[in-house]
Image 1 (cartoon, rainbow, N blue to C red):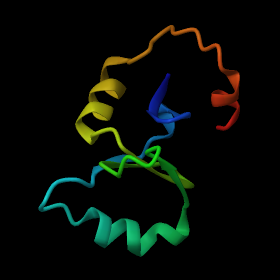
Image 2 (image 1 turned 180 degrees about the vertical axis):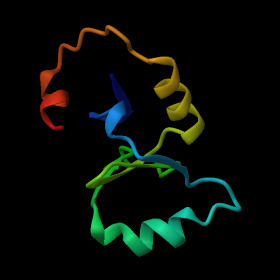
Image 3 (image 1 turned 135 degrees about the vertical axis):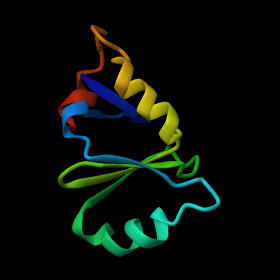
Image 4 (image 1 turned 90 degrees about the vertical axis):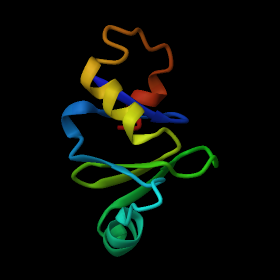
Length: 95
């Protein structure tokens, strides 16, 4: 299954290591993790310029998304878009 992160970015659920909340006032993830370890990963802006609310981490890529971490987590757990027919194959080819 694939999880839609925003704009034209999707990632396989099985590749997701973590989903971080970046928008909470007490969240230190952005300062303590994204800024510190961002150079170790390919950083992808999947927000479409709408601002970052979450960070989705895979083995080699850090996706910054405008979709909340709670929404992404719910979609990943419930099999969001199970059996969907994708007509834009370019989205899937990016992964």
